[in-house]
Length: 147
Image (cartoon, rainbow, N blue to C red; front, side, top):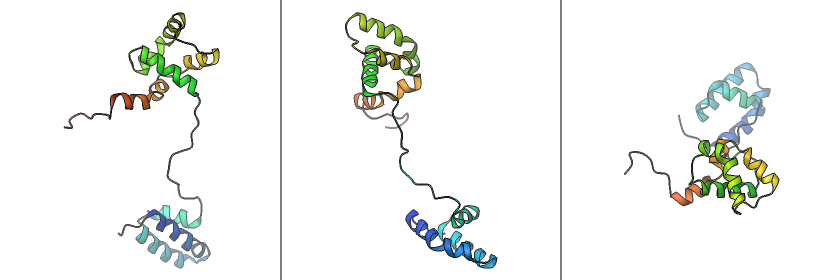
């Protein structure tokens, strides 16, 4: 089997699919054999592509949306730093106490909506939000056993 790039595979699908759909049973079998040999796709996957049932998956990052704004992220970083950078699972139950103590001492100047959103963060989100800050503060991640 030869290695063919994904762009070439897409071009092959575009070129062969019209003839494949219009062809007879024997002609389809022959075209499918050649297509599978060229691309390395499984036979059933190749049949679906050539029939045009669905578009091939496009690569790249998924479009996402942030639920929490920059003010919530900044407030979380302040609370996270004040708690000596503990993990989200341990920080989550401490958030109400820490926010109240910081406001009492004049360090937490946040509005009601930011405070509400900060208190609704899940432990997993608490770990995800300061990821960039963790990476820049601690350097690259070290793996066990590497020298």
